[in-house]
Structure formats: C-alpha cells, structure tokens
Length: 458
Image (cartoon, rainbow, N blue to C red):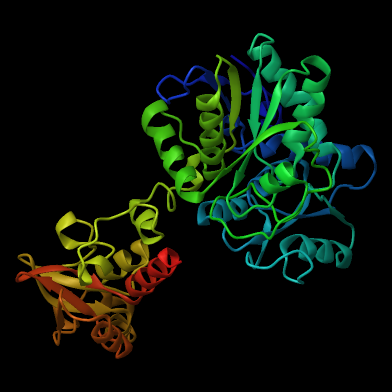
C-alpha cells in the first residue's frame, strides 16, 4: 500500500474500474475513479499543478492570496493545496452549487463570494469576471484562472493520461470527457495524439451548454441553464482544444441524474452530477458502436457532495426529475405525502426544543402536530418565537401549549385559487382525501407545481 508524508502526495494514481452491470453494448467501459483523490475530485490534480507553476514562476509567496472562479471542485482542490502550503484563498462561486461543497470549502478555510448563476460573461456578477476584479483589487494576490492557465491541461497530459494508458494496457479506443475549464480534454488530446492517434476523444456536454453545438457546427449558440455542476459552458475556454473531438453527446439533467443514481445502485460507485453526464454519454457512444471497443470515462467527483440534491428523492421530485403519476387534483401539489412516512411532524407532548430542532434539520418553517394519525394543530416559527422569547428554559414547554388549533382543511377537489388565497393569509393548507390527512400544502409546493406546469408548456 502507498505511504505518503503529506496529503498532497496522494493526488493522482487513481484506480480504474471496469463496469459490470451497466449496458455498454458490445463495448467495455472503464471508470477512472477521480473521486478517490484526497479532495474528492479530479480537480485536485490541476490545483496542485497550477499552484506549483505559480511558485516556480515567482507569482506567489508565503501569505499570498489566491483568487479563483469555480463551480466548486477546483475550489476544493485549491483549498486543500492552499491550506497545506499556507496561502489565503478567495473563491467566487455561482449560486447553484450544492451546500455540501460550500460547507466543505469553508471548513478548509476558504473565503466564499457567492454570485449569480443566471448571468453571462460580461455581466459584473458573472463569476469569472468578478473573480478577476477581486484579484486586481487585492494586494499580493494571484488570479489562478483555471480557464486560461497552461498548467491546467499540463496536469492531465503528464499525469492523468499516462495513468490511463498504462492501466488500460495501452489499448484505448475512446475517452469520454466533459469540459468545464477544458483542461482534461486538452491534456488527454495532446497525449493520445502522440501515443495513440486512433484513440477518439468524445465530448459529454449538459443540455444548455454551447460546447456540443460548437463541436458539431463550428458556431456558438445561445446558452441555456442546467443543474449539473462543474461542466458545460456558455463560451469556449481559452485552454480548451476541441480539435480532436470525434463525437459530442448532449445529455439533459434528468438523464445525468438518473445515470448517476444507476451507477450507485448497479456498480456501487457514489458519483457526482457531472459523472452522470459523462457516463450517460459514454453509454450512448458504446451502444452506438458497431464493433467492440475499450472506452474510458471519469468519475469526476464524489456523490457525497450531492446527497441533498440528486440523491434526495424529494429534491428530485420537486425539480420534476422523478415523475409521479398525476392524480388530477390537489394531491399533485403535495411534495411529501403523509401516507409515505415523509411528513416531518411533532406530537402534542413533545417539547418545543424538539420542534425547533426538526424545523432546523429539515428546513421547515412549520410542522403539523399529529396525535393518533390525526392533525390536532400546527406549530410555526412565529408560535415558537412567542413561546420562548422570554427565556431559554421555555424550550422545555410542551408543543400543545403553543400550537395553533384553528386549522383550515382543504379537500383534494378544491381549486388552485382557493389554495393560493389560503396561503396568502399565512394559513397552512391541510389536505384531506377521503376523510384522511394526505399532507401539508406549502408555498414551496405550490411554486414547484406551477413551475413544473410551465416546463411542459410548448
């Protein structure tokens, strides 16, 4: 087993796993497990490479501040390396990133600047432009600029690609990559152009990104939006060399998430959302192949950063990625039906502290109070605040003393207009069907329902 003196020595030399249960047609599909890097992603490689290059070039010194724009994983890699080497780090992150990544970054000591994910290059809040501005205005700082830093593709040309070549016993027919900064596909393209020109480079691109269209037409289209994190762009990064890309597959969010979940269920690999995109594209490539091929793609990062998102059935359902059978009435609004054991509640005799902790844990603003399967009250944040504002010891009081008993019930056949009016009065909608409590209708449930209806309109 490998012995290391520092955690940075554990970056690279990741395992290669052959898939057994995913349907790859006539082909063999192999996964390069970059989630086994100490920072949990392939971006550890470029973080170490870019910081080492800046040190060699005299661009940083002890105590310097590194600044970078990142979708998350490059930031994690930089935070890991910066903490070990004694640099400060400021990261500008779009607001669609998972909370797990943000918490991880802060735990490593990085300063986080959150910015908008719905603006394009040239807007002052576009994450790359904002990072460059912060670097200009910060003394003794270095803008890492993964999108234009030559040490990024160099990490893959000299590290990732030779590892794959040797692990595959020098027989590689295709490599499937995504593009975030473009370093992986560029570095691998350079290596395989030298040692195995017949090895095809295949692009996996999320729907909404402009890169697959650019590969196919040579023109940049209009970018959309997507949930998958870390890959896809609204421009061609300066270091991205797409000249050797033989095929490009566009994968939508739903397929990416479904394949990532299949990867865990079938192969036992807990992978992130971009890995779902890559594996989905690799499977398409394999199934379309008329001859057996040896194909490699990447598990770019660990799925433990997405447990609150694509591995959460409720989040998947709220976003419309897990389709539920339409019942044609207000039951379609309820994100967490009581009969499925998915309603967080309290009992009348529970202390207020229990209610507060459950609100915090599940990010609820109100809880139904249930006794013997019946809703006997509602406790919301206002009720809780009124009960405990005079002293912490009041948290020990039972819920029954402070819950709201004036309940408003809604039948499944009621109209959306009735529900909207109810919620507008700050009342909780307790949905009943055939005499039984079905679930709580919240503002978020109604908003999610209306958004999903918008998405299916032509």
